[in-house]
Length: 214
Image (cartoon, rainbow, N blue to C red; front, top):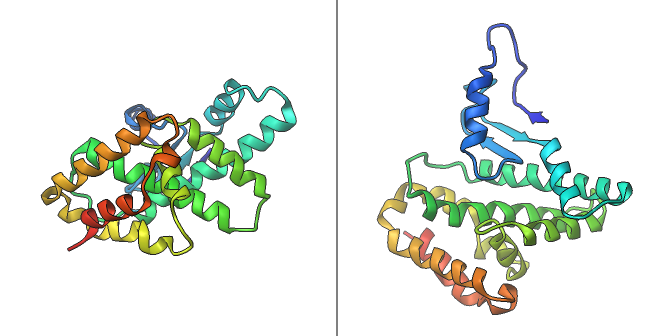
């Protein structure tokens, strides 16, 4: 499945090799956000691969068709919202240290998706629970989005505001130390048997503030 911002036309032919190259470069192959699209280079695109999502759900042990279809629907929604999170944070396009960038951006994208799914009443509540189970099984740094979600209060916009991160991306080259502290703490949490209980909300908030402050 591809969610795109403009219709494909004879004047805008698809370079399938470029598509394959782009997908191969990404660590998360079930979804993709592009600042400059392949189908329409003037606009961003969001991609979601339903086949891969379905396969992942099946391999996770959801063998009953009804259960699997529900999980696939919830995770497909989660993937699209995750990529929309990247769109929200699509600020400066200066090249940042890849690993440091990922340890902020990917957890925040999952945080945005989980927050939206928990607040919106447009779909069943168990979709939110399926999404939580999915993120919990993801590899670092994606699964750290669940920590941010679990440690957030109803005033979370002030705690882990993704727009602040987006606005400050152009300054991140000067904040390597703060980014490394953030990455190291999340890496430590990943090594814990119960990361959610081990995570310190105030410490997370303070480290995020160091990343986004002037």
